[in-house]
Length: 259
Image 1 (cartoon, rainbow, N blue to C red):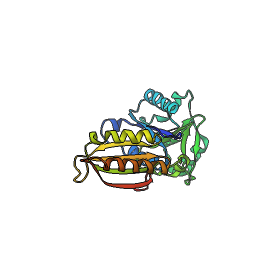
Image 2 (cartoon, rainbow, N blue to C red):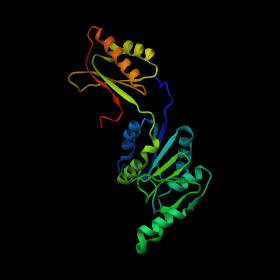
Image 3 (cartoon, rainbow, N blue to C red):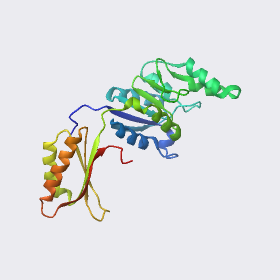
């Protein structure tokens, strides 16, 4: 089941030994999932990797080839384990350089309190782009289609929100149908709707703790008319069955609008 029209795709690379060891729980992927969905960008893959230069190099360049946008989280800073810039530079066959504009901003921010290691915040892959949004002081560093974001959740969110309009694509419309039936009872109905509306993605999710329905069906696509038509067809088919009925349904709405 695929969209009839091409959609922008994305991958997320979470970098950090502290995430893999369980010292800290990742918050950034969960945040970005919702943001990308609301923007109309289809998230295809999330991976968590350690603070290892070779892993970063291989993973990020692989994602960059496969997806339209890649977002990295973590490994950006002044300490020994902040190796994301080096990994990305290695993966793309370039080198890490001290970017003059960033260096000037780092020096201005800390002033007389500047510690030498803080200048590492100005070290970036050679040939990168500095992406500015509303914040004209601290840009997001991008190399080709890879956007390099900090791991601290508050900073990650602030930096992504600042540039998120750059990724806005065709919005996704979502509808839901809540059904009191077993999945097997309505499988043929789902097959029929899938065949009739190939541009609509349909997901079927059993629920075992709800009191009034047993299956949640989601319908998603870029065309609101298609999604609405698929929803109507499904409701009609299910309500014709003995022992199955639609409890309720949510009208089609843009993804993220309920958040």
